[in-house]
Length: 450
Ligand SMILES: Cc1ncc(COP(=O)(O)O)c(C=O)c1O
Image (tube, rainbow, N blue to C red):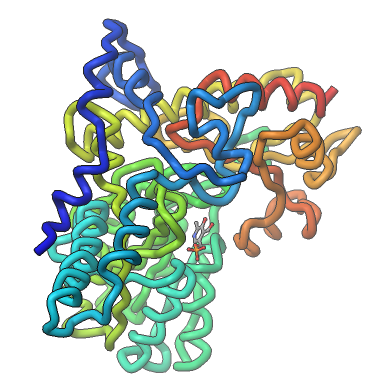
């Protein structure tokens, strides 16, 4: 009988690597109370062996082959070699019908069940039975909405944000099917001089809540704006307000697809009912994990279950010597804050402001500002977002993207509106990117803006 956990751990040579580096330096990061030892950043520079795909991004993830390329994470992250090895091993040796009595099926079932434990840890859920897998977060949330359908009554109210359609579209369609009402909680401006600087604010949410509120769905981080939304504070406030107004059953659905690679999820502390993220942003293939709180499983949702293997936790644990997910995400937050600070400092410098550059999202670097940085070039000599990205493509080795990124409502509400086809330019970085890579990006940008 294979022990799934030992299989996962075997492929992760973390300890040997961490012994090598120790630099006695501390760095203060805006928003973090304690200085972060520089040694943590050094440990983040270690990368696991990964697949030798033909993508340009893969070249830089293999540290030794960085050369002059400076990748970002335009749509998804790279995959750890341990994830690839496990999938190959699973398909080669234990691919069998699940749940049967014969021995290979028993092994296969145990391995697949171990994937739920991976996701449980990442969500910080209570139990593996609260986890379902599906091909994408979009389809998981659509399945969830369908699973909730019998429990929705005409006149129930859903509050959604105009962010990624994945946690918006399924609720709008469910409302149309069941005669429920959709209300929008919009991001509102945060900066006097930048009309594109937005964030979700709890004071805009509370007036939308009534005794009929049934679902509140929002993102922990918009894939366009990159700012971390304080889920726990918002949920606490909305639950108190809903209870005071007499709402009987409010369930909260959080989209963590853009959040999960950067910060620690905690469905228990957040007091939420549904949560989703996609492993293709978290160093594994495109599979999505959906959390459904056990009370919702018991009283709201009818069946949805899918499984696959996604061994990411060992990789994340290997990033710091502490062997603890909180330590990993604290180190990731510290390093990513440095990356975002460098990028945002450049984009908001007087020269760029004069040139007509607007950051789309919060301009001020902090631990709650992810290195997912969108911008537009307006002013006297506006630049089309597509043309900016084209220059990066011609330069080679830097994957950035332009568009609305399925945040239709948010992108079309930007004041003044941005071109619908071209949207914003988005640079997405994760912990395995380096400050030198940001320098390369800035070098190209300087040329584009000249
Ligand atoms: C914030 C956000 N939500 C949802 C999704 C959709 O995830 P999936 O492609 O797994 O459906 C994305 C994808 O980029 C995203 O950034």
